[in-house]
Length: 253
Ligand code: 6PG
Image 1 (cartoon, rainbow, N blue to C red):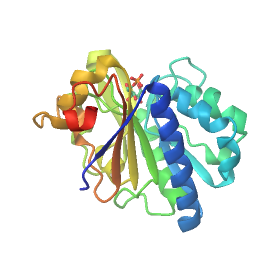
Image 2 (image 1 turned 60 degrees about the vertical axis):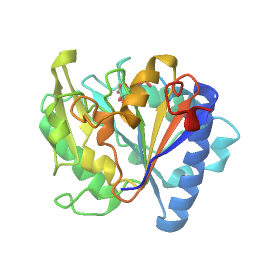
Image 3 (image 1 turned 180 degrees about the vertical axis):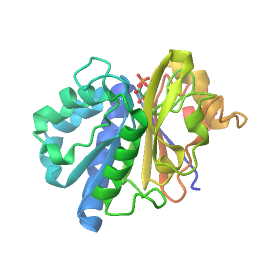
């Protein structure tokens, strides 16, 4: 496991600007090394500006979009055109502008009745695209973007839920009783296999939680974001000033 780096930006916009630069850098590096860039995108409100930045100029012209494979870190159990859909958010903020071929857009089909089958098929899709066996260990995505919810969840790994204990599967359905819903999510081993994981955290409301997750006692079942620790990849927390107010002075200044 590598030590996480905490990188501070002035505000949420700055967080997204830095994230966009990392996307560009890693896309170039991955395409040069492996001929493709496999990225998992997050939902939530913070990254919308990141997706808009990537699909606008000048960034848009700096990426070889024909080599990018889009995955999602999690999805709500709604149809793809629902306002709650993480896929819809990314499509509207970025994909529709870029006109990326459908074959490179791998959305989680979390609207399906057979949730378990949908999760297994998503694992098979990842395996097919990354050219590995779906029966093996999770393969490394080049980049996984994550957010952190107000209860310490990340992706759809919510406190005290079953998905937190998954050790084999790459993608699972997850019952979330506290929200009276179910979600689909990449698992901890899948996220931790990534070459790069980047959290985007902004806003004063996250300040206490961020300090607890990064520097408080280990309580991963209560604070699932603490489970994210890439095995050999890089972990970066991109945080804004407001969210970093409770961090040790060496980081928050
Ligand atoms: C989702 C997410 C979730 C999100 C966090 C942070 O579908 O809701 O993927 O894990 O990233 O809740 O969301 P904000 O950026 O809105 O704070």
